Image (cartoon, rainbow, N blue to C red; front, side, top):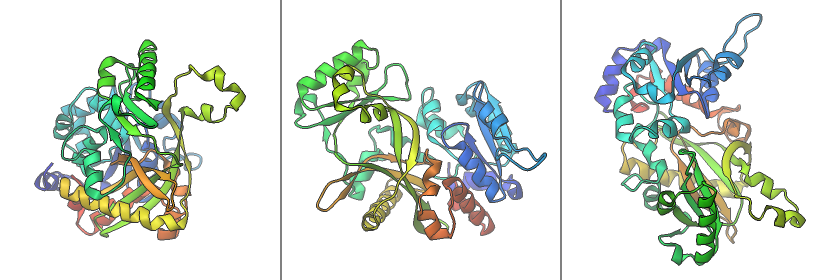
Length: 380
């Protein structure tokens, strides 16, 4: 949406009753809690059968003592209904500022192209709605690989053809049965690639069409760390919100198997579905390289898709062995991260004097923008 459209939308809003709104999944509770911490209201949009987390277990209740963080719930038949005109009207009536998360992208993109999502979501977004599509690795000027290359960020070497495989690679393909998940497998040669792909197709995890669209990337050895940043247009500064690493099925189980049991799981397909996150930290000698990487990414995104990054984004990295150690970015998230546990790493407290979750940091930026009459600088 243009700046002029955002200005017109805000003219109709009661700025004293701004409401942060998210899809009920992924990181919605973090956004809800953060809104309340900064004196804003919140609204969670849920799908039928998935509402109890928000409407019951974490709903705001003042009696006998204040508890819960969710102010309001809007239940739809399914998430893509959020684009319906009547739903958009209800969001406008509640002075909604929408905070996109990963679930918003994956559930709506199953049915709609990004152009349609951007056009039909009429309420203002916190952040740059036009950068969301870059996560899908779809070719184009804002594809995440192009952004990383423009920023001079090292990412795993890509292989165009299976026959080019000359070392251990990770193959990332669309899952055949779960459209918003990916099927991952490892291979170290063209022969192993074909044998594993055939096995996954026999199991119904991978399709021939999905395999044709797969990305083949060098497998970088090292620990993983998600570097969660926040770029503030109001302050003109880049912040480190926190760092975390993922828990995934059934990879965690493989990691804990003793060598004597390897043969028993040889034919079990590796799965990397998200389960949760663990707070982690970086040694301080790596903080400056991390910030430099984040600064370059902010500049590249601003040039590729103005106004560029607004608010939270994450560079998901492997720390490759050196010397010197190096951050290798294998994925980019251009919205609120999935880990509310980043607040329990020390970085936000180093900056703000206390732990600040990403959800609260978003709310802080909205409040600062409202109070300085600069909401148009943080919304699209």
